Length: 138
Image 1 (cartoon, rainbow, N blue to C red):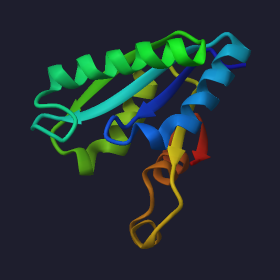
Image 2: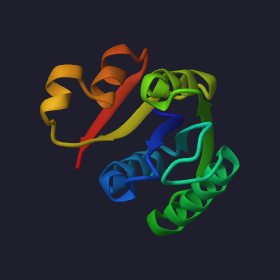
Image 3: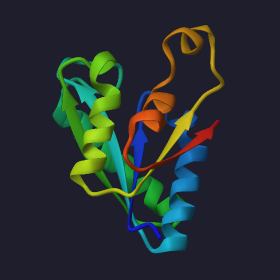
Image 4: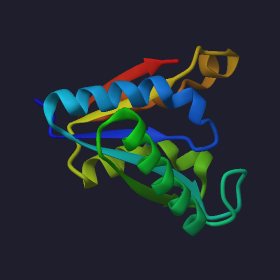
């Protein structure tokens, strides 16, 4: 049913994506699908990494650790954008298309006031992605 699953990863909040990551690994194992962890980073230093190269290294290490912990091989892909706040949702959707993913599994948190006004990343992707999106609330 699924051949390639994309799971967005926020390295600034790895604890908030664990349930979604477990769900993605379980689905990938069940269907024999490839699981691709995608991290989106800006060009400027952040709380996670000083530059995109360091971010890529940390994402690869995260994917290796998650693969060992969850029992399903995962590969990491980095998307670099100029403005993380503005380009995040589009970057994830474009990467899903680039890698020919047929499912996106992503985490979401309990909505706060900001999500009621501006919407959530997961909600935006679920509304606009041309493929299935499984949103896992932490």
